[in-house]
Length: 468
Image (cartoon, rainbow, N blue to C red; front, side, top):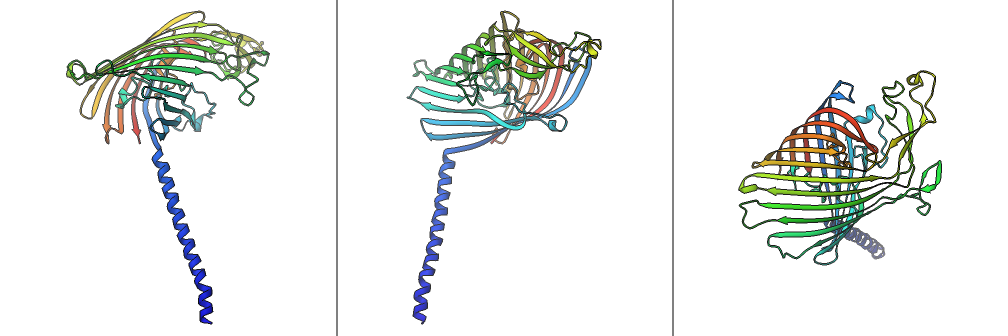
């Protein structure tokens, strides 16, 4: 009887042991798979947080003073994947919001890339791959690193954060890029040429074969997609004899952009402010264009950066952009809801159903504009002090649409003086910056074009930038 029991029990014990071994092996294999995946995929984080005070001595030309504390958080998750030494992919998600803004104001994120402060909902900032075709050529495609270009990295005490000069454009753009790095035929110099193609996708997302009508009242006329091409040359010189400078960066860039029209949309705007006795326009408008193309725009940009000039601890940079704008379509605004309650029109007439022409893209008729940025900093052991000066002439194409700062400087025409001090902590992974901005604003870009806006603004802030 005992033998029978042993014969019966032993296989069961053995089976249980085998199951435990299999489970243990499976667990170890899973750990190995996770480990291998982690070795090929890196996850990082950036946080750029602001606390400051903004004062404005001439709000909207009314003379009413504005003084307010502000807090803002820009949070980014970063991913990089390495398939092999020739193929890598990169992506990042961002959320950008003013502290507790959702308590007082409902924020509805609408995937508007021209407005990074969209609230707590994350959105795609970058998503692209680099494919090394040979020793000298790299193909990139996706949402490219077209934000936070030079010299943005210098005030953070970091290496390059973006590829293209800040005064050209600071907006997440989807496109294809081909970069050719030449053999070193110039001593101590890295020379590269880059071509970027930015296609548009103006169509019904579910049925892209249908196209997108300009407006409900004109369904037979379809909007054109955006399209652009950029040529860029970059040279970085690191001489062996560093008496003149430690390194010198030169970037030359030319872009041609064809701005297609837009799908009609509804929004409030100050269209009839100052008319009919209206001081604050509360109307709701439906915006549309009368043609499939908004404008043809050309941009030429120069960027120079020198570090440790004449053997000192001084860095300096200069960037200049000139744009040429040739607008085509005219933009109209139809009043669909007279929010002024007829009181602003004498109490008898309603503006509902009336259409107003609000001009053309960037400017009324052909125009040129410039944006120039000068900057310098003096380096200490773990910190540096710096100063910047922005000057905008006439009506250039708006460029700084993706600023982490409280006020995107590339949306205004005028002058900006910025003085700051940055201290680095923990192997330079954490920086804290305190600064003062003085802004004299002549014009401000609103939706389609510039509007007169005589304002003097001062910002005092503290910014924390951390990278994991």
